Image (tube, rainbow, N blue to C red):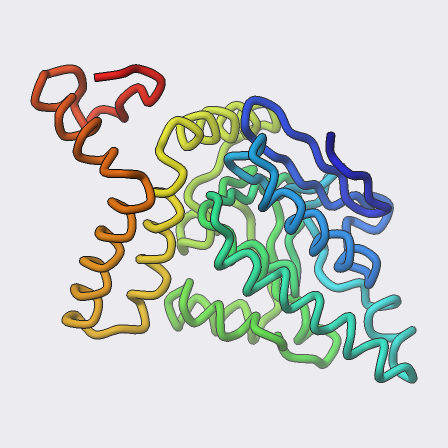
Length: 276
């Protein structure tokens, strides 16, 4: 049983939890209520064993047009305490919660992605987009700058020339260009293609060991802040942690089955439902 929210839809099927921005009439712009709903939905799915993979998408023709300029900026301008509360909730789910999420996360980019929506997009582990989806850092067009963590995340994700080009011009670009500059993994031509790819990728991830997936994510994200020796030591500690948490399954199942010729790791994962 999944909970219901005012501005977010949650569905779980075959191990894949889909969390959708649900303000299609506003191109899924992120209002204060949407930030509260997103934070709660992600928290709920985090502890829901039915969801092994989490997909973020949008209802209608937009992923998210970014912050709702009217409800987030204009209407909260003279309400500093409420604005501070909403700002912290927004930053928490878009950065800390998503970047440290224990389950694989995939952005299924079905349409517009503008401004602040770049943050949850980049925070997802993987991203697949429609070729005709529209992306843009539009802040400069109304005299603002990409604030919050947008600019910092672009530094990690894009080459300097690409990041500055779109930051300074405010020009939009499509899913093909997003693929070319590394903002998404790849793009597809139709919505049917998008969901076929998302379902295939989600099912593949559901078949892998959940603890290994979680620790692989932690190792990657935390190693980026370390030198090589620190990263090496940290990886050894993570392998030991994995071995303890999953009782040596990677060796007793993975390595032993490979030795028996039951599967080839380079071609796919072993069947976790089958005993050695």
